[in-house]
Amino acid sequence: MENTPSPMDQNQPESGLTTWQKIRLGAFAALVALLIVFLLQNTEQTQVAFLWFTFATSRILLLLGTLAVGAILGALLTYRLCAKNRKSQPKPPPFS
Image (cartoon, rainbow, N blue to C red; front, side, top):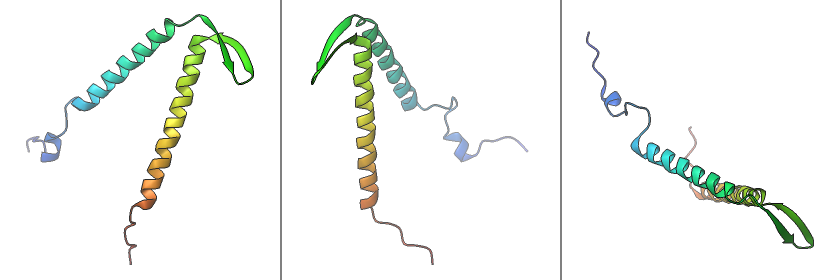
C-alpha cells in the first residue's frame, strides 16, 4: 500500500508554523530587541518623587517596573473582560 497523505494532512504546513505565527514571532522578537536597546540606552541614575517618597534609582529599573505594572494590569483587565463575556453567553442545554 502506498503512503498517500490524507486530505487532513495536506492542509497542514510542513514546518509546523503558519505564516502568521512566523510574522507574530518575528514582530515579538523585534519588539524585545527594541526594548533591550531602549533599556541599555537609559542606564543612568534618576531621582524619583512619588507622593511623599523621594529616591534615586536606575532608569532601567524604573522602566522595567512600569512595564511590569502595565502588563499585570492589562492581564487582569483582559481576564476580567473575558470572564464577564463568558458569563453573558448562553449556556448549552444539559444532556438528558
